Image (cartoon, rainbow, N blue to C red; front, side):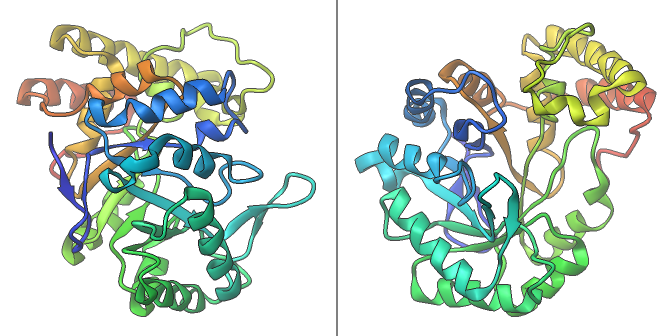
Length: 321
């Protein structure tokens, strides 16, 4: 099964990672511990060894705690990434605190929740407007030096912020959003990361399920479904995106793959991309995502995808870095 090197480290990760945010049950419907634990238990057989969670995935770290319960003695077979610098307030509001003190405390709490004495990859979840970025990075460099953390990354940063962070702490990974419809990082972050051997581990490859091909054109979102607030799921944009999915569905059918597998495969073979985070709540979802591994779209299929994206207004050369 394919493994890719994370930055300049000796960590080897699967190109498809399991995004563990849905298991926190905060914005996803139909989540339960039984399915979540079964999903985590199915990872290795599906070829996935890379898990992505965060300190604030759940009001009380539910995602990290589930990982600890599921992995047990198999912990060393996985690369676990978590994040610090964001937490939940008393009214359920998301709060920044990327001060050195908070990052150290959250790291220790994450270690306890995960039931481990080291974190493979610790990200700054997002820059804190109230804390100089160099101070946050410096604290993470200290955690790296202690051995509690094997590698450091930065999430949700601009290129300028990534460069500033890297000046104070060795960076092995950058985690931005990236998918067929959101490709802004190709202009600046991707080439910088390639040049500096920083892995790109991207989230939203399926744009919150939009590019999975399973939402009908007349789908009505549940009032509790947070996706409805995004413009991509509304009005004319929704209809244009459904046209794109129809084109992808034709490509997937000819390739004898699902739409999600085609989209994920396209993503993990883009220049500079080391892995894509794919959320799953059930083992069947995990196995479908893992079906994007160990094969490649043909040149003809890639050309057809380019044509579909051009028709959608997302034309960027697939060779662009």
